[in-house]
Length: 209
Image (cartoon, rainbow, N blue to C red; front, top):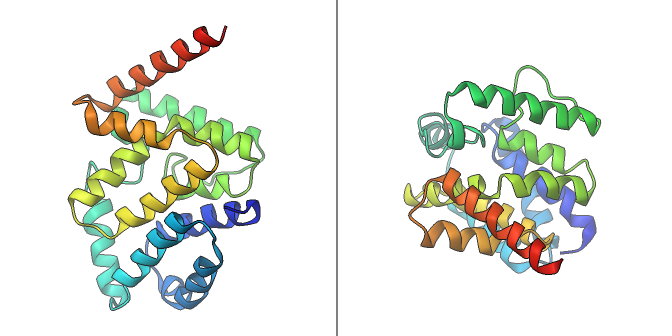
């Protein structure tokens, strides 16, 4: 993927994952035109599949589906720390650290949205350097993979949007396939998988000296 398309693609995916509004309906042609410009086949195919799957929906149908999979789905919501911590008090500390991380990079988060809300994360990623966004997204790759898989289980068209996101992350050098295989092959909790990934990364560092 050309570098010039990466940040706008993060921004587009952020937009598509937000609550559907009239703005979404009006932007469809512009979005489709942008997708055609992306030269990475897997990303453009996933986004095109999503658009085609909702092409006959009116806003009310789109909203109904969105609420069903994200607002009522505890395992398919878009809050990346919720999958790991739920309502535990530790989640509050992680949210605070995440908000401070954004502020250190010059990105302000309003009190109306939690910093672990995936569209907020991706908006942040569209405005910072590759190094900073990779540092952030690599911490939440497992959560993104799990959300995508849950959406696929629910036969939600939004699985294609998460698929596109993982495709962009792969283009930036993040270990998406390795994490995906770990999720598929190991009957582990998300936290156990995180621990395994940390141990694996440490082993590689030790081998490299």
